Image 1: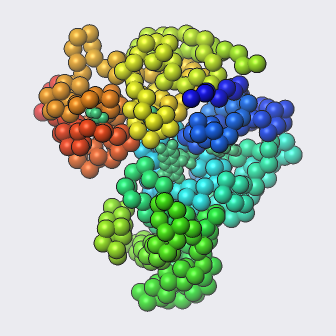
Image 2: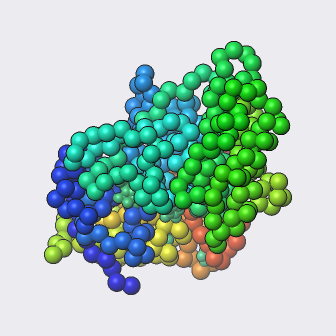
Length: 311
Length: 163
Ligand SMILES: Cc1cc2nc3c(=O)[nH]c(=O)nc-3n(C[C@H](O)[C@H](O)[C@H](O)COP(=O)(O)OP(=O)(O)OC[C@H]3O[C@@H](n4cnc5c(N)ncnc54)[C@H](O)[C@@H]3O)c2cc1C
Ligand code: FES
Ligand code: FES
């Protein structure tokens, strides 16, 4: 196999990165963990003449807890996200999603920003960040800006980034009291598996002791060209008292919203059905967590229950 | 024109300084420049784990790391585990438990086991399976590999005198 040749740049500041991107234009590609980029180059999908490595830019690898929320640097490794105690406490669904990406080897290289910028409809970090209301801090030749995560994805592999832009960090607002989260991914093997369907949920109950939903978000992966938020779930549950039958109804409603395709991993119909099953489980788990119960399904139960027992 | 660049690595305890091409990967440097052929190349795309090495103590697939990205880092390959003729307890356990057949996956498996046991000296079977889930074996069916990791954990505890 012919080896693709490129130049390598290892800037140490963000300014240098933007300058290099400006000079080199579309011939350059940023390298974070390389677990997508180097595979794409290997497969001949892309052939950049210049690689700009981000790993030496210190400010991209920090996690900061502020009163205004949590800031996660774009180059923080998924292994760190999986284990960071602040993330595990405030946003357990984000750690849980990170822990299910690839293998230990992959998670030691792969970054959270790389997962977003690859913009795969199956990117496992995307649904969890979408239900968390993430804001993306972007710096480029024309200055800096904040983009809401819902507005970042333009299509499979396409984002709102322009050629000189760098994703610097992901900013998460502090979770409201009485909020529960969940993330479930359906794969065949459990490890090293691209999601067939993935679902993240956030459920906030009203301040009083009742079971009234004040805010709810469900994001679904691998069922449309980009990860999508469900509007029907929001409409059906907001302001209502949570019951099993209402959760059933909400879960059922996503089947009409998703636009899955059939491929070698699963048929569109299977994805549609599983989107409803995982939505139900995610909403139940998020609800239990919101009321402070530890009860939740494990990922193992999700894989075994859904793939092998059909339920 | 693509030119070579200088890279400094610490490999199995030795400082190495080399001129590499920007597109060379860590696995290329280990196998073809340093002759450390214990690191195997299976898939070249991060899927099989055969090329796993420890970089600053962390398990990484050396097929997905550019040599220049490893500049200044500490690398341990399978050749770095034994001391002289004496095999590392994990290597011994793999032999004793019959966890090696063709041997192609073995260096990666052993380094994955080392990465696990360095962090968690008392792993459960489930934790062992998780930690090795990025390493494929076409021969053994994994059972003996998991047994070997359990045996290695016991050996390492004994050698620390904890029992
Ligand atoms: C064996 C294997 C298993 C995998 N399993 C999973 C899985 O289970 N789930 C999953 O979601 N993914 C999986 N992946 C895909 C991949 O590991 C993830 O998408 C990972 O998070 C990518 O991060 P990275 O740092 O390696 O990105 P890179 O490969 O470095 O970069 C990816 C893309 O994003 C761009 N980019 C990176 N950082 C920035 C930035 N800060 N600003 C602007 N652009 C940037 C790069 O230019 C490139 O185009 C797997 C990959 C492999 C090889
Ligand atoms: S050769 Fe690197 S993971 Fe297979
Ligand atoms: S022993 Fe042959 S691949 Fe594992």
